[in-house]
Amino acid sequence: MIISTGNAPAAIGAYSQAVMAGGVLYTSGQLGLVPATGSLAGDDIKSQSEQALLNLKAIVLAAGFTMDDVVKTTVFLSDIAQFSEFNDVYSSFFSQNPPARSCVAVKALPKNALVEIELVASK
Image (cartoon, rainbow, N blue to C red):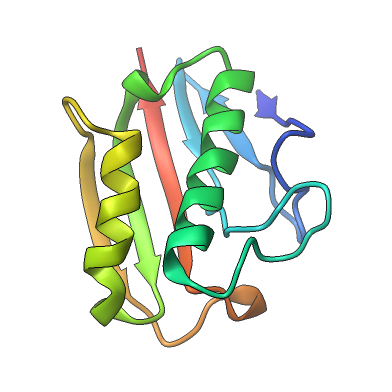
């Protein structure tokens, strides 16, 4: 089942915001784009990370899950030196019982974003 919400940026390519399969939610990667404008939330890692996580939360809620149901995240940073600042924001969304996480540095992200995050949720 395809999951879509207007509370997160529309897909900018041939993909869905998320797919539910076998009771598990798989999201596409979310940049720090403001849904109403399609622009990055700011030019710093903290504002983009917060917006990316808000976008993911909107998708998670649209699928009938909560952030407590998130079991795995994958994070792509364009500059691994910004990990600490990213982690400060990330921790505020997953303060207790955080999900498993992978974090990798990449050469570049769409729209010259600083961060992209995808997740898996299950009840």
